[in-house]
Image (tube, rainbow, N blue to C red; front, side, top):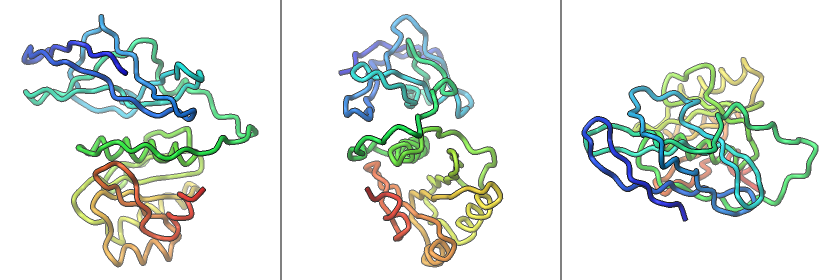
Length: 228
């Protein structure tokens, strides 16, 4: 288990006891970002994608992977970024060996969705579970939600309470077409009937993000993508 550390908010000086969440490595072992007991938490005023992920090495198999940077919400409204020891920035993750045989895929480990950031995190981890290891923030910002990209793939994550519309699906598809990439849509509030029809016509897999943190396929294209 992750050890708890005492964290003091630099804004209101309130003390918190924080333990980093665990994430499942490909080998099945839990990975805990090692917290820096001597580092000071930083108040987050502006979220930058590259700063919300860290590279942590699994203590069991030695694999390095990107995991969410530990953060804590203080009662005063400040978001605190908890320092991690021994971690590196995401752009240092080695590219996967495409010639190596892929190990059997384990069941996806969900993360409870409480915030918009959690929704984006779940989508990014799910894409990695599907086999896309180089997840990053998309170069082009979508009309709504957050864009994620990987080699040959463009994804849109919509954490709003509004069901995705046909236009949302079309915009994602058109952007992916210009980049010669496949695309996939994740929505927290689901899709309108027209949006589902549009996605089936254009060949866009649709997933809905339930609050337990498990993406659920909405159309047959998503079923095929999530299949073994």
